[in-house]
Length: 401
Image (cartoon, rainbow, N blue to C red; front, side, top):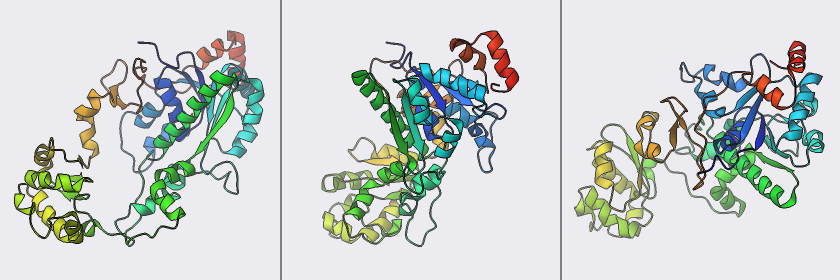
């Protein structure tokens, strides 16, 4: 085992809320040295997320634990000339610079690609925005709730029918998939650098990732497909690709796409072999034509037993189904723990969510708890060549915290 694929890779995380810093987190999981650049005082505003109305209350800053694990914090005021000079020195020795600041803010702080690229010809500049970097919305700020979830059509498409209220997204729901896209762009650029010796700028945005997530139906619309009526669950067109409520109020979802082969196994597991050759449902076209009637029968059947019982009954029979999970399931999910989807922080028993990729033979960093604001300022500056006198002067100027 090695010490991480990206051991020795220097990454500057000059970003916030959430996709861009999460991409840096994935790099850190594989050994990269990530320096989190935050403004002195309150630090990255993302530190305050759990204090916003409606978020779960905890003694732990769970959002910061997830997004800032493994990183070193440098409290640096980029609005001050001294702070800009520190950043420029760090950029000169960095491999990757990540930002999602709006383009006007980057221009004001002097951290555009045009500003930084001349300092380091091997630099990978990773830019993330809400709506792309051209057009009238290029400078428009956005969160995943509006630029990814709403703009892409996903917010509308998950409604049960056209009269239902649009569904809200949850924190980071679009940001974390977007982080993987930005991570992929960075790694692609690193591979390009291995071949050319030159760095480059890579880009991604919330809007593009959102439409990619809804791209099957988006592509249908792009080619002029005729869409069918949106139907609520009770009137779905396919009873064996639908979700059902169990006796204890929990839900499961069937996804039997190989229906002709799986139908007999399903009826057997449900204890209703009489349905196998019932003339109303004997063939796939029959079942689809009478889907509403079959859904009503399934509703009655699934309501007779708890979810745990149905899992035992359905497992191991070649049937594709899934539990509609709830947050209470996650801490004790043995499958997630055994596959290192959930891993403990170093020297604690607290679990965190792992990044969703593994490379055989390459170690991932044991997650370290996130830094306090400016915890590593002196350490980072010394490694960049500043002596104690220079660091004291920077602190006196307010450029570092």
